[in-house]
Length: 162
Length: 465
Image 1: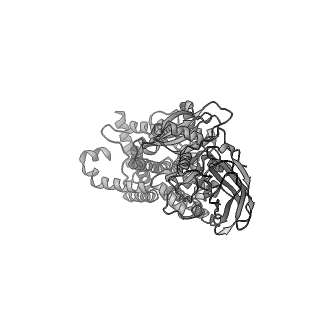
Image 2: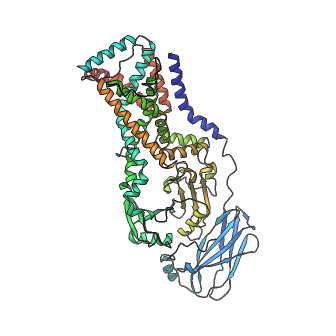
Image 3: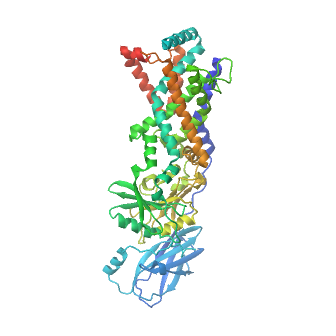
């Protein structure tokens, strides 16, 4: 009789002890697969100077690791004047070579603008954004414009996304 | 008078049987059960009560904070950026650290705000940007009960260790209790799996203790085991085991892109992070002349990646910081933790439930079960039943003890005559103390106290043993 209790007690403690260890063994064979794909990087290249009503070429260099990416599914440039995001302009980029995608566009007035590239490539999506100046705008003016809170449009702002 | 009579009966009975080793085993295990129960019952009642309330915190808070949570639904919502601007205007000295979107369109957006070292939630009407109300973090109903449940409301490491100690000793109470309950003579339904409710006195209370305890034992054990991943000592141990055996978060979670300069853990920069990804290293954003993304972009990424609401976006900390999108508090299968480069929107790290190792998966499910959100209201009710059962059986054990306790003494079960048995049981307990380190430490402390202090002081000795 005594033995039964000892056995029962030992079993119970064993069950608790092994509850973790069994799981460990079962799991150790998993997740040894390969890592994730390397991230896709986008560099936005803009002309040094841009003037209003003059054609400018905006470029995006898409790379993965050190390799240029020539097979991006979609590269779009979204351009808007500071504080006028609601009037943003979405342009499809054309592939040039060596991972460079470009758009030709012109601006109808001086000021501070934003460009955001929406790049979908190799199942990854990146969308870097930067500001730039068209025409002659003093540095103080640029600063003043940028420091204003970027007033968002009223609305859910998913319009430009696809 | 009746008490002393009972006591003498008991002593007669025990001295009659004490010579047999089986009786010594029983006696010894009972002694452990008795002392452990006496010490930890108050804590277990606190845990059961606070847990029972916390289980229903979603419903209770929906009621309590109705005016903060719900607004009239309208056609178009403001953009997240516009909502943040509203918060910044209302709290110019505060910093927004995170925001949470709920899937109910009539729910307000919740902003976490840090102002003068005080964390609070600001609830914003997404349709007009107005602040619907504010709650300081430590005044939140759920936070108060969480604090009682995990730190006895006192707070701090010591209180947290006491809770863990009580939970671990509850395991020992279960094991020793089941041993005592085990039908010895002719197995009878009555008094083992069914209570003898018609009987009176100690038998009645004994059955009201042992019978529900037997039925609930598995469920209590499940609640304890699923609660331990949070604990300070065993929780860390579990985490370490999961990481070292690759059964926690997937190893590639840290292999994306450049290695961070210093290891920052996800839980240090983000809110509402799943248990399994708390320690995922945070990658760094590459800052090279680009503007930080807007919240619209980040919520677009969340939507694009199929993240289920409610999710929380934590703001980047510093130039190299990342946006962290996390969801942890609903269905375990929806668990997700994404670190997003704040300039390019690239996913630097993306860990979903499906990618967890088996241990992280099991613990994630366990945590959801523990918190009563694995299978809806039925889960909450099941948790409540276990809590109420636990309270019942602690009360019945207390009454049982009162009925037996002599006035001048503690009324502990007698020490068994067979010293070998005493020693063996002690060693088994130490064995359990190795698995549950806090239990081991407490056994050693009690042993030393017992040996060098308690037994030396006459009146304590007379009362205690």
